[in-house]
Length: 372
Image 1 (cartoon, rainbow, N blue to C red):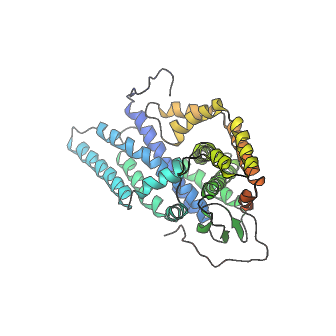
Image 2: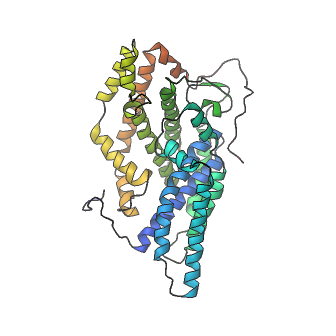
């Protein structure tokens, strides 16, 4: 929370400050949509497309506030405000149209935090992330911002689109997956050229963590390749930060259906002392101060745009945060997870993830693609 601001105190921002935040959210949605259209792997496309749903949640909270501040003393002003209201309602209808609160579940289950979904639920939700997420929702967000043009400064997208064009070839160069590979994560059967190991109910939490490792690894490679295209790079880092905390939470803190953390589960399992000792070692390595500092950034910027901070304040907090230290910290804990898997025969299988299968040229399984 910004210095000098009391908890639960709503800060009234200027119209221009709110517009800057709305346009920043629109820009984020455009980045995620266009990157998802440009990268070559359907799995990578879905990793990126999640970002649209993350920023849309904040957009739908902020846009009505701005609409209510638009002038309406003349007939043209009232007409423009009515157009904006209709566009916001259309986004909400499109968002609500997916049966069973789909977009909310995807945002919460794959964006803000990896929820303890069953294998079937995770696979079904993941393959349902397709091109329509960006094609429908982002276009509507752009229309809202366009209809608000003239109410404050609405910067053009030219420089951002140019950066996206530079970013896509670099990101595609990071995709080194060739041939058939083994998958030990819970989303393996959604990828082509992949032989997925199907986890049993006691293994699903470990396969979920492997999936988060995948997300983090991809995002780190992308971010490292995006020097000089900072508007795009910061959006990749935003997803990385969400996934990093999701990894730590899933590994150390979250409980399963039996109300057990991984450590408690291993201790109760018998013959798991070595694996449990590795998890305990990782817990002893946790740095509450560093986690708290970076969690503030997650909560103020990556998960939502904090309503009590201006965009300038949020971005200042982001730019001065301990990114290098936290990246090293997260990777140390990924190492702990891998060490845990290495000392227990029943967990060794998770170290097979992304290993090539020699002598097999292709697999016939063709999961649903990202394109409509």
